Amino acid sequence: MTAVLDREAELAPPADGLRRGGTALAMLLAPWAIVVANACYAWATRAGGGDQTSEEALALYAAHPSLARGAIIAAMVGCLLIVPATIGAMALTRLRARRLGLIGGSLMIGGYVAYFGVGMSDHIVLAMAQRGGPVDDYAAVLDAANTAAIPWFLLFVAGNLLGTLLLGIALFRARTVPGWAAAAICCWAVLHVTGLIAGSEWFEVTGAVIQAVGFAALAAKTVRSR
Picture 1: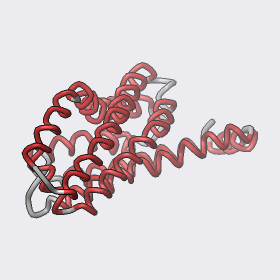
Picture 2 (picture 1 turned 30 degrees about the vertical axis):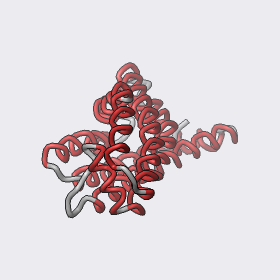
Picture 3 (picture 1 turned 180 degrees about the vertical axis):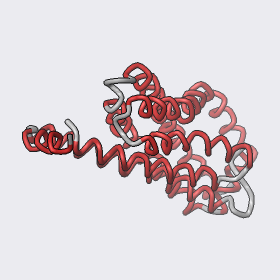
Picture 4 (picture 1 turned 60 degrees about the horizontal axis):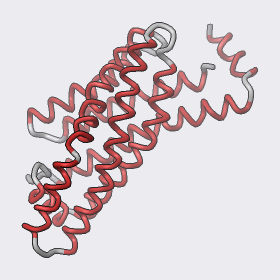
């Protein structure tokens, strides 16, 4: 089988090789951008604080502007790259778990596209925090904006957790990648929820790292397959 795949790779047209290479690169980079975003947030909140309310977010960004900016930029880069990465992952499910892969992958893409908008709005929070001024007024504006964005935030939650989990299950059923790689992608959703319950961002960081390892296996498969 390995010899057949290698022979197909040799016969593949240059455009196909470029597409597979670009998809594999996105699979490698996207999850690590998510790792960086979560690590920045975890380090900023290591002594307490958070962004559960607008007031808390303003205080956190004012105390750690560099980490906040790093988390925002990394999250936005991850949101962009996760789209081709997820499309490539969906392609690996097309033989035995096409429908489940399509549902999970589409939900995942929709969720991260929605979160890209959240990242854009976080730049405003950071600008307010660095400028200083009437915190109560700033918080009231942010609360109104957050209320209007609730449907999109719910889409992100569904795509980030349920979508990723369904895609991992589809990969496991498709048996086109090692079972541990599919399980690693599922770990993101499991550890993310665990972190929310435990109140520690380091669970999310661990889940993001494990997910990145799983996507690396998908990238290797994508490079070798047509």
